[in-house]
Every structure is written in structure tokens, then in C-alpha cells.
Length: 303
Ligand code: SIN
Image 1: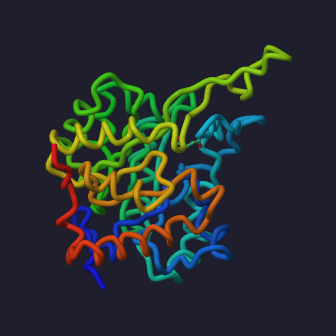
Image 2: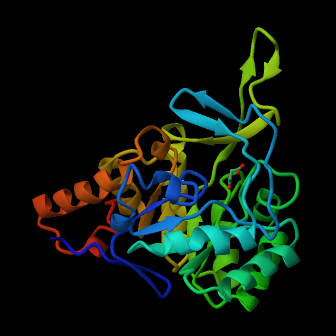
């Protein structure tokens, strides 16, 4: 067996394959379809201080090679997450990364503080990139000053490995990665969704109730790869790559471009077993090529 272990800050993962926030519920929903024990980590749905109902429907639209969503960060809130969802997740042999967000810097810090004080959370992914809410999310991730403030505030109150999830809806992604690293983030997740629009030509109405939504899936893979390659040259912290990963070959492309780990997102909706297939596929690729340690592949693209 090849050595697939990777490190994200102080967090050691048995393999580099995770499932992305917002595409895997709270884990339980997927347990009939995939053995959660095999995953490097589960990144939970975004959690806020209080429960949120999300945006009105329609809030999903399939596009060529992708999906537009505008869920609006619907979630059960920190209290119910800790009480009802976390204990279930902790019964599996995998790491639990909790994606968090707030509507203000203070709220971000409060959620982070609360989860830091909770047994069983292995790391925090800071969502400063959701494009579907008016307050919070992407607002913090497309303005350098806000990114600085929120990463710094969370870092001060939270001793867990901290991962900043960046938005691709910016001109220079490296600027935001550098800020996050400078304020103490242990890793960078990228990319979240690209802001998009679809229109029904019969009704002349947008396909989503919120008009715009976040585009994910294979359509965004080349953009994600380009950003990972750019950020890998700009920062020293590890990158968790995501954006349209559906196969072993996709995952390997991300690793070769500079990602230390990867997360499967939209593919979970049409093949819940994707992450499992990728773990096996990476192993076979490494055996075939005589590569003993996954670290030999990270950033290994010849350019
Ligand atoms: C959503 O809940 O609207 C999507 C989550 C995200 O983009 O972070």
C-alpha cells in the first residue's frame, strides 16, 4: 500500500480525500451509500451560531457540466450541530472539519470559540466565500480588509487547525491567500463556487429565486486548477483543492497542481461513492508508477 498520509497544519489525515462542505450534509445522510471510515476527512455543512432556513426555492439548477445552487447556508445552528450531529460523526474513524460562518466578524468568532470548546472537532474551515447570502460568506472573502479582520478574529479565539475557504470571485486569488496565511490560517481551501445565472426563456425569469447562485461541478475545474497552481506558488501553507473533482484523474490533477488534499463536492450528488473510488484510484496510480509516498506528487506538475 502506498503512503497516502498528509498533514493540514497539525492535523494528520490518513489519505488526502475529503468531501466538500455543503455537498455531504452532516455525514449521516450519506452513510447508507459510502463507508465514512475510509475518508480522509468530512467537511460538514456550514454552521452558524443560530439555525438558518436558507433561501426560498427554486434553489438548485443543473447547467451544462455543472450545477447552480443558492441554498443560503441552511443549517441547524451550532447548538443542535454539537448535540445531534457531531456525536454521530465522531463514531467514525475519520477527521471532522467543521465549516463555519457568521453575519459579522463577532459572530464568526463566537461560532469558532464554541466549536473550539467542543470535544470531537478536528479543524475549522472558515467560510468566507458563499455567494448566496447578503450578510456573511463571500462579503468577507472578496474584500481584503474584511478577510484580514475575520481570519485574525477567529485565529485569536480558536486553537484548532484553521482553514480559510476562499472565493474565486476575485481578480487576484493570491492576494487573499496571502492575507489568510498572514493572519494565521493553517491552510487554504479553494475554490468555492463562481457566481452564475441561468434564465428560463419561456417565463423570462431567472431559474433561481435569488436570481444568481454559485456554479460548481466539472465546468469550473480548469479555473480551480489554475487558482491552486497560482496560490501554491504564493503561500507556504497547504491547499485543499476542490472544484469539479469527479474522478481519480481529476484528483491527481489537483495534487500535481499543488493541492496537498482534495475535496469531492458536486459529484457526491450523482455518485456518492466518488470519494471511495478516488482513494482506490490514487493507490492504484501510485502502485503502477512506483510512487511510495503521496507527498512526491504534491505540486509535481512539470511546468
Ligand atoms: C449555500 O449554502 O448557499 C452554499 C454554500 C457555500 O457556497 O459555501
